[in-house]
Image 1: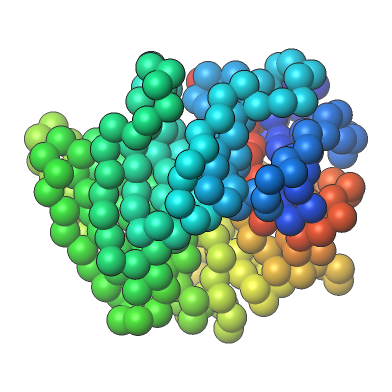
Image 2: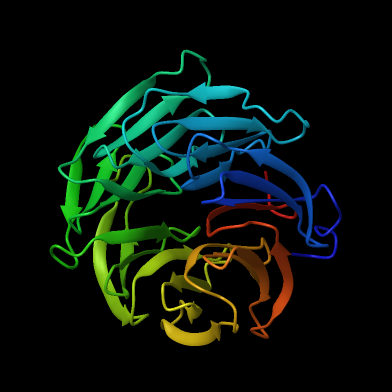
Length: 318
């Protein structure tokens, strides 16, 4: 975060997990500014809409949308009647549609320009959906599942291809860097697979070329995330650490760990790529310096594991 971005109101940070609450934080001070009750279930996934007006929370059989700028404790939009757990949420960059994945073995597209609360498109899989990443071109999606398959879904044509880096080993997380040069995916074995991306411009479909396999962690890898400058890749794990890798050669740059930290479920970079926010099973979120590998701020208040966070650094372009 830049000094300008640390002003209150320029940074949005929300965390949630198994204590049935969503907490909004003043990122620069560590103070919890608002707590919203989420009584229906745990929260599995969080994401701000691109216009920063709403926070989407995915739980068991529902999605709730909360007003970011109001004190209203109730969701302003409810997506009910879904099947099983929602595992991931994201948005098209101009706020036209939302995508979700879930244990019902589907990835879904929801049109945000109409409020009929019905999904417009469904991608059906044979196994539960574990993760989704939207390509920067906004028309191709990478969808990971419990069987270990990664599906490349072309939204223009409905064409899909798949790659299976480790048969029968669930893919937990997938990320594409902002430059659309690399895609990374991590599995239950702790391995991180990296592909070079070719194409993806105009009508040209993305093609994957295997780049490297990194034995990132000895236990489950739970999240991978490229930095905004595309120079770094963070991998978070059940081994209680986050590792930062240089994308120039995918060498290890630093390991982020502290005595009280447990499983690290989620992470997000600041806009300047100098800081990382993490969410952990010990009930704390932390702000780390990437260069120095130390904790700059702790966000304490949750009574149980934090498994999801949403982070927007105000110095990033809207």
